[in-house]
Length: 81
View 1 (cartoon, rainbow, N blue to C red):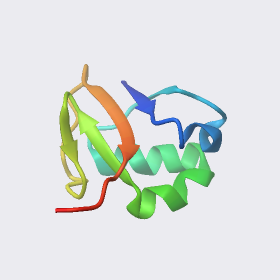
View 2 (cartoon, rainbow, N blue to C red):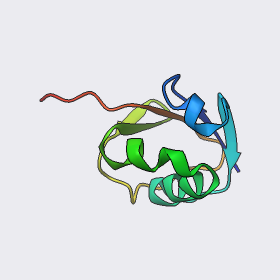
View 3 (cartoon, rainbow, N blue to C red):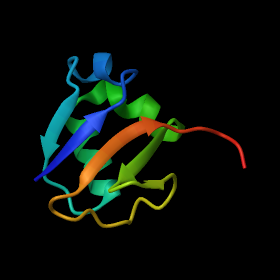
């Protein structure tokens, strides 16, 4: 199980939860399961989210594995280069 911290903008779409515990092996599985639990997250998950795992930020590599005791944060994706 992984504990995920949601950025403040996502919380109203996830029943005002700041932390969610979910079982997922990859970022893709994590986002999919969160979207099933909280359907309102579908729109922000399309292009507005980045995922930080143990301090490393992923913006596109949804196949990235998630270690069991990882610190996971969903945050607003910041455009730019």
